[in-house]
Image (cartoon, rainbow, N blue to C red; front, side, top):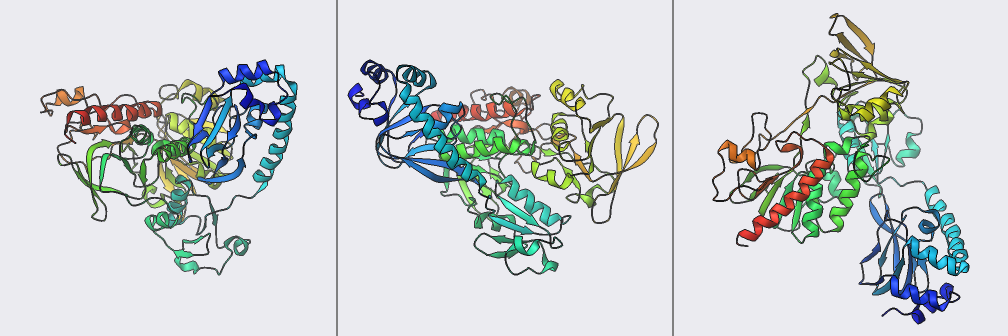
Amino acid sequence: MLTADILAQVPFLASAPPEELDRLARSVPDIRLAPGEYAVHEGEDRALLIVLEGVLEIVRQVDGVPKVIGRRTPGQVHGEVPITLGTPFLGAARAAEPSRVIRLDPRQYHGLVAACPAVMDHVAKLARERIGGLQGMAAQAPQAKVTLCGHRWDTACHELRRFLARNQVPFDAVEPEQPDFASRWQGPAPDFTTLPAVRLADGTVWVRPSQRELAHRLDLQTEPSRTEYDTVIIGAGPAGLAAAVYGASEGLATLVVEREAPGGQAGTSSRIENYLGFPNGVSGDELASRALQQARRLGAEILVTRSIERIDPVGRRVHLDGGQTLQARTLILATGVSWRRLEVEGFNRLIGKGLYYGAARSEAATTQGMDIHLIGAGNSAGQAALFFANHANSVTLVVRGDALEKSMSHYLVEQLRRKDNVHVALHSEVVAAHGSDHLTAIDLLDRRTQAVTRRDCGGLFIFIGADAETAWLPPEVARDARGYVLTGADVLKSGRWHAPRDPFLLETSVPGVFACGDVRLSPVKRVAAAVGEGSMAIAFTHQYLAAVPA
């Protein structure tokens, strides 16, 4: 039991009035931690932790890996910077051994300070010292795990850059022609006729590595740890990651299979302004990174660079590429959608060479100072235009219709109007792309006059809607004419449901197989909706498992 006498043994609390210590003892949480348990996570709201027993390790995510940056022993505090400056926690705190900690929220802390000003002096002094240390850490140059050598417009090099960026792997990309090549590559130059090549931090050099090989060497999980799971989630977009978080947190053996990188289509969004809880917006890759860390911390397995060749929905057998087979008690389809392709002269030849479907933040550097064009009038196109406007000389949205307001959120339209270097070409479409080894120009058609003009173009990004790629699914899983998976009431209407009970809201035509996110037939295509459906899919998974034998 926490008492005023115990608190009085903390040196900087010893001068506090006994009645204030007694009040604190009756009101603050008395937290007991086993080794490895967290007292606070990075990014949580401000508070002040005081160690009474044991040892806390202060941990920060550095390049996606937890790194111990300090320790707190009995009598010491963590949270002095957040509580002083009103910021979230910059580092997590976890027990290195059985530990006991108390936590003061801002109201409790300021009540203590009012009764004993010396406490604030002590905490403020610690905060100044810690800020100095944090400044030193921030001044350290980030260490690249991979140095990638390749030609700028080489498609294979572009795919590796995209793979590394989307998997949150810090890397340095260098071209053979750059004058500082030797200092950045830091080793014998590779054969420039066999690029791309990668150099790992340990000096290992690979020529034209596959994404699977690179993922394995970078310790990204590519193999499942077991052969049977309570639920296998196919796809690691917002819906799949939400299902992974809730599945793992509720004790289900959970596996996510992703063919490229976590985040899905949302992971390429430069800015999501209307996602609940992020008043200043959040980039798609940041949202995906946080969800990925959360899912892994709770125990979900996330396989990358793995694809599913087929599933046996009745027997719950999942056949991975390479002949590997898994057994699943339930399946969750969260494969999302893929950008719709345009059949326009020159497009297929220039993909990855200045022409892209969608846009990741990592592409910003390639647009610096250029005049670029985006095809589309939805929110994804608007978000990308705002982001690229900070890098490109000019950004032109190419729109077939007569107004942005018909398909784009009002807040985005207003922000675009305030950008001097963002232009909108209404009643227009791109009818050809030109360039030898990379995109240099496009032909733009005015649909009203049928006039075609050629424009210089340093980058073309396409956002014209998406399609569900579900042809690989077995015929037992009902879909509509466009490939979207039917669930719940839509399954009943189709006449494809044969079980004695009604299907759950997110259940497909096969009992125990669920679908969530954009791959599901639904008029709502939003990140928030996908996250909600991912969590709901786990709730229905529990209901299904409760009714069937283990």
